[in-house]
Image (cartoon, rainbow, N blue to C red; front, top):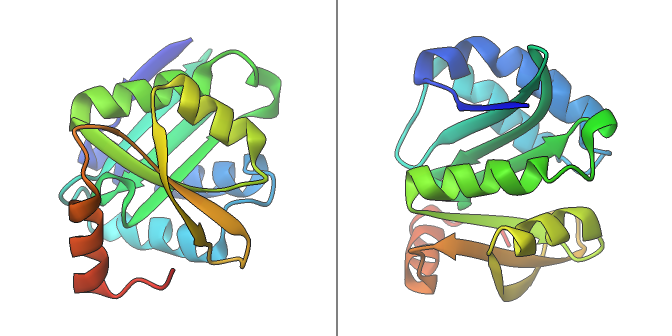
Length: 161
């Protein structure tokens, strides 16, 4: 398994493939809003705190993690069904945390596989909210994060919670 962080140019070029991957391998947990955000990134490239890490198995996409604004703005994570339970999600999260220094994400409480991957990668849950789908959702974070940074960003951008 090869893990790599995409450059801004690679990310822009791969966005259509990543969208397709998240639609097919996200087990219907990736929201339309998240996919639309990813689609809009094709023309903007990396902004502050944006990263895309991928796992490749024989040059085929086995897993992907995309974060916008360290995951505060958007976070998408999926592993191909063939490669699940091989710690791919954990490795993608650890790689992103190491490169960015911190990361955030929202995960619905009934998504045990993603929660397990995040906890195994050293993330911690710090807030329970109602997610965009109406389900109870946890905010998680790892690295050099702060609740104040999250609150400041949410206040500035009026993201619905």
